[in-house]
Picture (cartoon, rainbow, N blue to C red):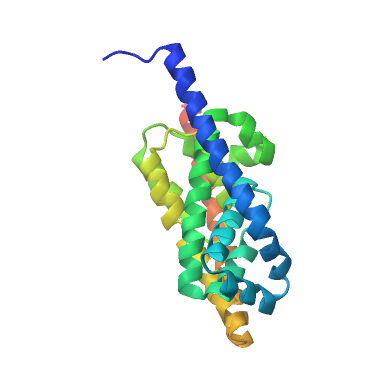
Length: 241
């Protein structure tokens, strides 16, 4: 089988970067022209809901663009957008839109990291944070993918960090697509349900949902820290033996 030449690799890299730039610029454009009003209205629930209803598919696209940018710019928290989705679109439509946006954003991050490597990851995350998940860089390990999915599904875990780190591993693109899509379902559903409860003025229901979610997230963080510590200790033992 003929190996790709240096020139063909360079062309593929240019094409990949060009496509990613186009997608990112499109997301920025959607965010600028339709998403900025949504950001202004997030703190004004009634106007936020009215804006979404009056703009139809444009409102949907604007929201998707906002979430995609939130994932790429990892320092922006995602929970407020998920709650706003539940409030504006309802739990079912809000969940679907969040899942679509999350899948697009996570895959974009994955490709960007595959192209630019550690330099891009270090823009948003310190080496200390990356060291915590270094054990997930195990090569050709199916168990690694399962652990990745478990960690990703736990509410409260740093999904943005995991999204960026995934690009540094040899994980298959299809496996990553399933992980970053299925793994976000629990946290998105709880957030959109809480947002919908606020929209329906069922404040006690919303409070219960958020308190339970916080408790589950706290447990998720503890489990995540334990998994990371245990796997790192095991890796050190194997290295020393």
